[in-house]
Image 1: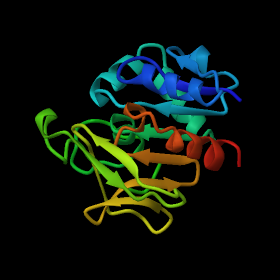
Image 2: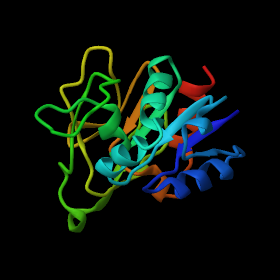
Image 3: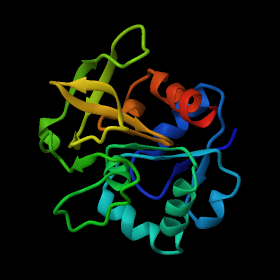
Image 4: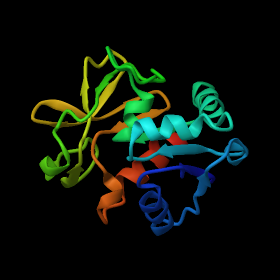
Length: 188
């Protein structure tokens, strides 16, 4: 199994470590050529504006967008969710690959970061959700499956080949969300 982790900015090294802990040797994606033979990709947390600028250097962004549109499973955490989702009235381009609006920094600034227990569909016990300048998911379309809520608002959603989390699973020692991505999107 070849799982890519977009490694141009953000918390990519933590996703790499999580995948290694469950026996998957991920591919760090920095150029368009790194996309060859991937079975899925993670777009990590970081700064979504920086991601967009860096990915446009060698058409990495355009090639990644086309690969995901063609069905490659993709998981966006925090900034990655912003890129993959929809954004109304936002000057930053969005890929709109999942029918949910993603509002940047909706849970506050860096100093407002928090950890909370989340009930995730299919998990036998709660998951510690780490929220850092987290985006808000709203106006989910009818085909979007809500996997977890915080204060009655979606924080983990899935549609077709796309998974989004507004929290950072890579900042915990709990690999269940990484395993869910592999089992439910990549291996299906």
